[in-house]
Image (tube, rainbow, N blue to C red; front, side, top):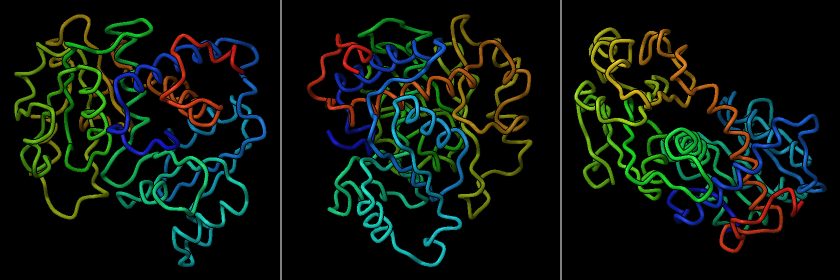
Length: 324
């Protein structure tokens, strides 16, 4: 594999290799010098057509920890705002010698178009495309779940029950998570009002419920999603108060979870809407931990795609530090 465009591209072995590599690389965060020379001399471009805080910063930190030369490209203030096409932008980056492009785009399928074209000769990593997918977010979520629910190199999430709540219709995080979690053996349940579920969801590898309270007692991890108003062009529920009452996670609902269960959120959180401040600030909430894990996962992706190894042929027993 040269690219990471979709969570569906990953086999179980690929996913475990990424999680295990991230586990090894996470050890760097506790050191005084947090760098490896693996990508020295390589150029990675962060091509972001949408606003981002966590993902963009996480990729940039990961790239610099692997000693790559980093170029941050924002659509605002660039030739894109003058009407330049994705193709011409890609050809420009190729002419400048980009070895990899991390792309976030408002149009679903843009990273796949780049990966399938001959505009770029380097690797393409999907950092979120429209309402389609966000594979590195799913990987860091799975990494976080494994650390809490089934720790250990080589371990998957078989038999674990994950409940994803909220705006499934517009969520690329939900789409990537259901694919990856299914690959890792977890059982996924979506909980949302009918208006926020996509057409054809009965064909997805998951269960569907409209009642959050009925799912909590048998959940190992509950992931709350933000209602993405910026992608909505109609009224999908009566009021924010009604939505929060039926689908928000508060202290009373958190108390119904099993003692070992964790609360997750890909961010940004809207406190008081899908999650209360009491839950967001609880020790059971892994939001900040997910951000830290995102750096390790993105280092693993870059390391395997650009560090001279591929997802198909690198043994899991190999230490990233030794190779570097």
